Amino acid sequence: MRVLQALEELAAPLPAPVLTVGNFDGVHRAHQRLLARMVEQARAQGGTALAMTFEPHPAKVLAPDQAPPLLTTLDQKLRLLEAAGLDAVLVLPFTQELSLLSPRQFVEEILCRRLAMRTVYVGANFRFGHCQAGDVAVLRELGRELGFVVEVVPRVVVRGKTVSSTLIRHLISEGRLAHAARLLGRPFALSGEIHTGEGRGGPLGFPTLNLAPEQECLPGRGVYVTETVVEGTAYPSATNVGLRPTFGSNRLVVESHLLDFSRRVEPGRLEVRFYERLRAEKRFSSPEALRTQIQRDVERARRFFSRLKKSAARRPRGVTAAD
Image (cartoon, one colour):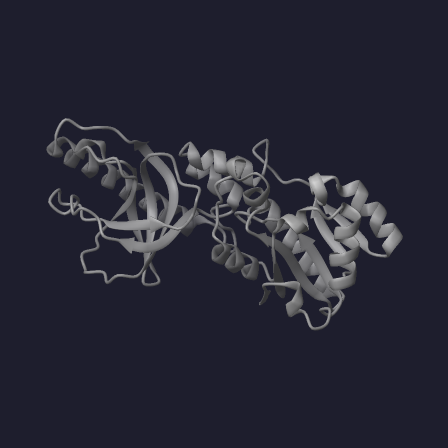
């Protein structure tokens, strides 16, 4: 997949571009449906499947105090967009100048003149242009006038809830990671560098790997069933997100105990995939009481992965847990 960081990198328009525009934070199931239809159309007409996204998120420029905590880093988002089959992504720098373009100016100057798009795919709630004055109706009218086709992909509803980045952020902040995974189509993941901790897990018999997360949206405090990816291999784990109140800490930590894992890990990157919440964070009366609870947490995590393995063995080939 080709990644463009500015319009100036386009020496010439891409061949027959089929375009979509959005922030795509999380690249969740609604995004995935839109991208799948766009890619299918691009393949059918021998064109280029192109997504335009923005960096930073527009809210960070226009209303920084109200900007949402993002689900994905730019690198994560690009990997997910590539996995969706896109040929190219334009990461357009979002500036005050860009925000002042009217809906017509945005379409005429960028989508038509610079990108020469033929078809644009958007969601039903798509907004664009200065003060978000443009919507699907405005885009369709401009399409009729300027000669491009607008395809609107309906909302995706899971268990009665419309899938959106906003809803997923809310679920994650509440610790409802199993529900968030259903809307994402995969477990929510934090990634970053291994961080040196205070070494409290080892003496308790449960050594941990500490993560310095790059993502802005973090799960609510508690203990979770997770997978921790170390050097490309995923290991079942139990992960604490919290302040470790038993030890009087006031620094948020993300620390994972890998099940049946004892080897030394060199400094490097880590990814933690969250499946479900085991319990809320709490203060224990002593390290011994905490050790007893961690033993229970680890056993519950083991049972979870045992059930997951049995479920995967029964599942028809080609069907995933998120389905």
